[in-house]
Length: 53
Image 1 (cartoon, rainbow, N blue to C red):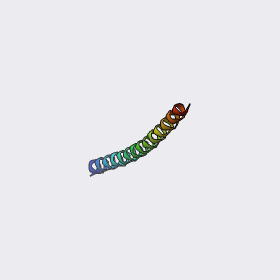
Image 2 (image 1 turned 45 degrees about the horizontal axis):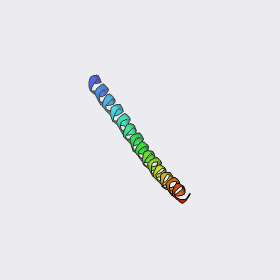
Image 3 (image 1 turned 45 degrees about the vertical axis):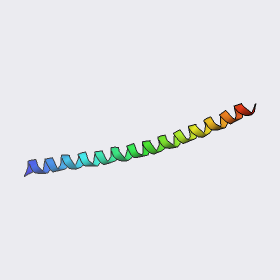
Image 4 (image 1 turned 180 degrees about the vertical axis):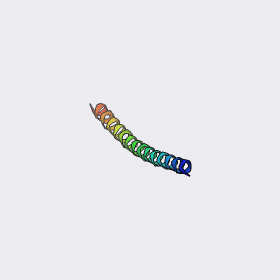
């Protein structure tokens, strides 16, 4: 009985940690996508500024 409770506890902790990692990865992907969009916009603006000169 004690071993079964220990196994259930370990599995529960592993699932919680996995959930936290997946949540962090989702936020990192979102932040990366926003940074990429900002980079594209800045490159477009600077490219147009260079063409005008």
